[in-house]
Length: 383
Image (tube, rainbow, N blue to C red):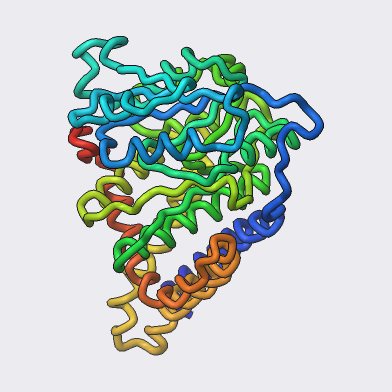
């Protein structure tokens, strides 16, 4: 047996175990669990915190969607914190007429000194400190949501009493190969998020749809300890709260709790976004999470390495590649059947034969670029 085949077998078995672990967790979650807030407990006051930068094309639609929530109007507020936008985001947010809307300008807190650096964690912290709510819900300025969003998130909180809750995020509408690739990629990340949380080992979440207790945020000193890392306002906070309050993280597997955002329209913006997401991976408090990401990277890299080896002249030279790629495709297909079904997007499975090779290249390339920590996001250069 060739060493390449032995390596392929080992990695393939481990990959099977990993995807089965995600899938079992996803299946364990109660799908569309009825989330009726206020049935057994008094409804809490909620503060929706929205940090924004250069969202002039989306901010008013986002605010109108939040204002239109069916949660009692006197029991929630909206706090927008503008992070030195170079467009009309701040002015457009202030145009929206609502008694429960507060629009803040980060420049009034930090002056010109913070204009060139990433400030999302500062913006959220300012929002939380100004919040009147017992519960904080965060989203992004380019998101919209169904009118049941707040009620669903609060209903899940009241039923389970978690300190930190994350909900589903969907990219829509997705058009063209790039848009559809982003859509299925985010759906996969959503599935891993829910699956690992259900297995009581949370590994990721999305800051576009979070709920947590203000008291818990303050007890762990918010982002203290990772403020120098440009990204990770979602995952680092989740990890801090999970370590401080074990078994306190939940996932809402209910489509009413979903928020919707648009995919990146250009390849350059897509790469910059993914590099931004990846750049925080080496700073996770749980080293085992970094280990999982490293294994996934190495498995995809192995498949690329095995391609030229498959054309060598020794016997069964093609077998290591066929085994590794075949296992990856079948396991990814199995996982996606369940996760895409939640979003009623199983038609995306027809594109999986096209996306799988692209995904392997994408993982390997973004993994390398992410280690550099250099990217441009919303007209701000990070290095």
